[in-house]
Length: 433
Length: 143
Image (cartoon, rainbow over all chains, first blue to last red; front, side, top):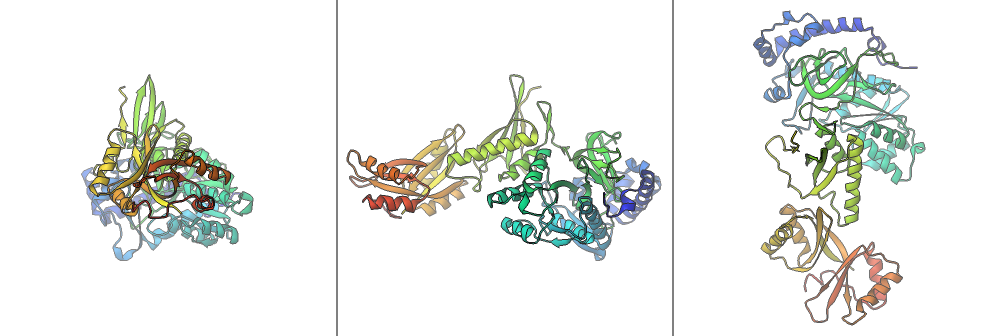
């Protein structure tokens, strides 16, 4: 029997849901107009006032918010509430430029935790469960978000945070954790470590895992499910919008339900900004319709994605999104396969290399070739050539499984890959097409 | 007993080894022994120097990736069959050699083999039992 945390909302008929979105959007646009001068100026520049927005059908009229806006308005420029009303900030690591600082009122925290509670309930979580949260706690949204959701569901919550693998496994075993929340690469690593400790899936009571915050493949899901003996579920979110729980997977495990009572999703053409018809592949754009302190309208995520409006066997009516296929700013097509540097980055990080890399695409005898140049690091260097060779082969296998393509891996000297101000020169496309 | 060897990651392209020895020269680091191993794209330079820990710092500051490894340095009797005696002992003790290289010491009649083995103490004990001399820490540095 499928369980829901907020059944009346999660299974709400779509026309009712649309009416709820219309009402909330109108209110939110007014809130932003009145309280966020930065966005009001953008609306005025387009000749739009809140009166032009009568519902979701008018959403396309509103200007976008981009990463560049977040940078320009840093730190307070996009706030919709005075600091005295805010109770928390969370922040991103700032890997793609300036860090994002997002503000929350108590109301915002509450709704965010509801979203996480829906995700935990969707994987079968109840108050009988023990939920181990091995996402980092602190500025990163992973730990605090799932922690709050777990409390709301009533699980016994174990806030281990990330790291200290033996202790993690000790807690899973000794305190009978049934749900694990962490990044997919850490889940895979826990599985490996358990193997090394001579433990198998039958030695632990875990039944489900909620894994997000980085790209992972279907192969990786199968691997994790096997080594940990669990069902592995995806979760999606961005600090800009709250954190994990913007969308989450249900028992069907084929897409993440977007919490549409809080976020309206659109798919646009990343080149033109045009809204694309239902079912198209394009850039995912979110409008938050309930957030008070950091109310972003039409935020361009840069994630390339597809929405699925077909009814889901789980009974939830909210639209599902696929795993993001990559970033709109740097997609490559190699031998007909879409390749995103973010996928390569994920594999490198999963294998212990630093994210200092360069991708060289060339065409030899009418066939595209892909070379990934990776800087050697102190962590990955050993005196043993055989071991280096083995790690290199593991990396090649990891890339093949993530990309579905064979790539050549070249290890280069540290700091030999050029770093320019801001964006590194990551891609060299030598193909003459 | 073991001596400290520094292994340095080098790309396999012209001028790389020269750049490394340039750094060592400019810091007046004296090399006792060197061995190069390579694949198609990269190699490892293994060196034994007079000041191993300083050298590791100097190389890291210069942007190299390197690691300090404890290896066995065995004095080889300078007579025909000298190396064979040593290898007989190691072979009988069932000790596997990951790699090795030879060098001559500063004094007459002093030759050494450097060996990388899984367990330095076991190998040292086996060799000493048969009267074969293994370099003390610091012995090669001060040569």
